[in-house]
Image (cartoon, helix red, strand yellow):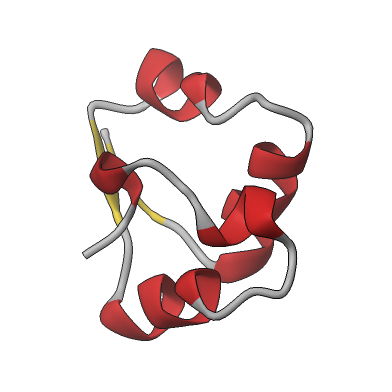
Length: 56
């Protein structure tokens, strides 16, 4: 299954340290460039420092 993620889902999972759920549930997670840019610009370092597989 492929899922397209938005900023709020990824940032909230990052805050509770559960990004691993995406890999456990979905085969492919698509993150649009605009979402990756929003995550990188987040003021919270936990969100802006998401691992490379979660950003474009």
